[in-house]
Length: 466
Image (cartoon, rainbow, N blue to C red; front, side):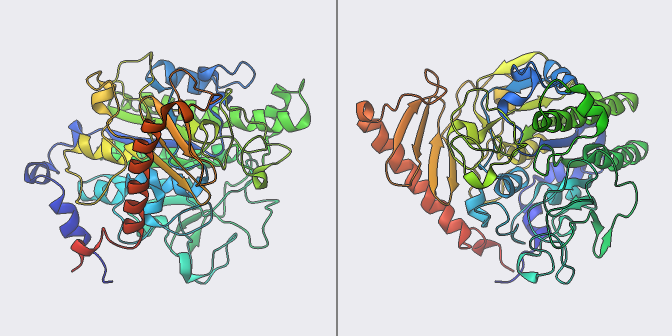
């Protein structure tokens, strides 16, 4: 298959009016910051009811924006969800079925590629997990092979400070559990060598702040994708944060402490936006890439002594498609557009980032299947029910979520049905009493699965070849 002509493809998806005004309306286009934690549970934050872990920065952010109580990660594990954020598509459409598998294909259209087209400066900071950074240099699990080469700078990011995979949450370049060290890469064949000690969230934010400052100084709109490693293993907190939780056992001290350290950096970022006087027109989101790791309905490989996350009572954990593996903290803040202090039960998913932002920019979606929707009508109170459904897949499970119901086949064979409005913890399987609804939803879900297979086999790209 020949490479896509991205210029022609992107231009075909944007109205001529927007294209003509791209250099003239920068003051009307919001800056975009997409924040994401790694393995943070729905119940690990104060704004969702946690009374132990200190998250004042996130709690303040929640109070100033809209909280999505039903916000879903695109998958129950890391890599697939990350791709869904920047493509608007389910991971099974672009071939990342599980963590540390696959890569973002060159034919995919990323949010950062579109942003650059209309004059944004773009940066990725933190965990990438969507492909390797070198075909020759060993790095972590997969680096050094050309089979999965797809770094940030090949996907529309003109600045990066990125790792291919997880690193310790304190002193990130030390005590890594891999034969080949994971580096912070800054470009082709380049990686950082200074200011890499202490809290990893602070190390990341030390690069984000100058990026934003330079963009503000030049009056250039920016897209900053900031994907923290916290609280993924290796879970390590520094002395200051351990002291905050000294009444708890060592594992909890480290888990709670690294989350509070990350929270401080979220507050630092938002304070910087206010100092620069650009917070009013900056859209900031926060979520997690999946539910908390550890045993209890998820995949046993994610069990770790320091994985102390809580789901808030939802069933399952990382690695499964029950709510606990998918439902994550979700906030969106945009002071000039979104009224603060709101909480909504409207179902939203990481795929919605791409489609919502393209809608803000005036783009029509390219002619291929998208699994996200434009959330702005829901945020504005003009759409009360999500159209269609949100589909989920991992290799051993499939499920779908509608406004009211969840259909899930934990083994891809027997289907269970739950009313998420009346039974959000998925305790009562009502499939037997609603066989007609099960058959209808099952039919739609299996058709969607086939659509994803067609996408993964290149069916969406055929009309875009040179």
